[in-house]
Length: 245
Image 1 (cartoon, rainbow, N blue to C red):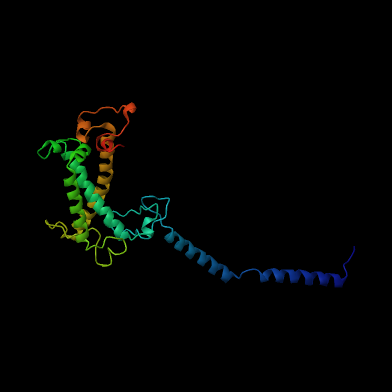
Image 2: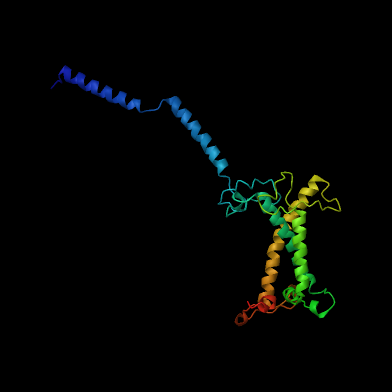
C-alpha cells in the first residue's frame, strides 16, 4: 500500500483546522442565538400590537386616533381622515349631522300628513314643499341656524380652534332636561344610541331624497301605493327638477 509522507499529512491537518476555525468565527454563539430568538419574539409581539386591525374593516389597520374611547368607535376610517383632522372636530361634525338628519327624516314623514295653513305649505312631498316655501322664510331659517352655530361655539368653528379648551366634549351642549344622563351607565348607553341612530338617519334621509327624486312619490305614499319606476322617465323631479337638474 501507498503511505502519505508525514509532512503532507500534517499540512492537510493544519489546513482543515484553519478552515474550521475560520468558519467558527462567523458562527454566533448559543447565547447570542437565544438572545436573537427572544428579540424576534418580542418584535413579533410589538408588531402585532402595532398592526391591530380595524373592527369595521378587518383588512385595514386600526387608525391611531380611533382608540375605542368614543361611543360608536369601531375603527372605521379607510381614508385616514382622523390622522389629518382633529378627531374631536370630526365627532362634533358627525353628531351634528346625525341630529339634523334625524329631524329631517322625521320631517319628510310628517310633511305628508301635517302642513302649515296656506297653499304654499300644502305639498305632501318634502322636496316639493321645500321648493314651494317662501324664499324669505328659508333664508331666515338659514341665518338663524348660522347664528346659533356661531354663538354656541363662541365663533370657534374650525378644527384648529373649536377644541382649544381640552375639557370641551364633542357634541355636549348641556341639553338634558330629563336628566337621562345622570347615571354614567345610562349616559354611555344613550351616547351610543345617538351615534347609531344619527348614522342610520344620515343614510335614511339620503335614501328618502333620492327615492322622491326617482319615484316622484313621498315615502309613506310609496309604501302604501308602490309604483314601479319607468326607466324611460328617469329624470329629476320635484325641487331638483325645478332647479333645472
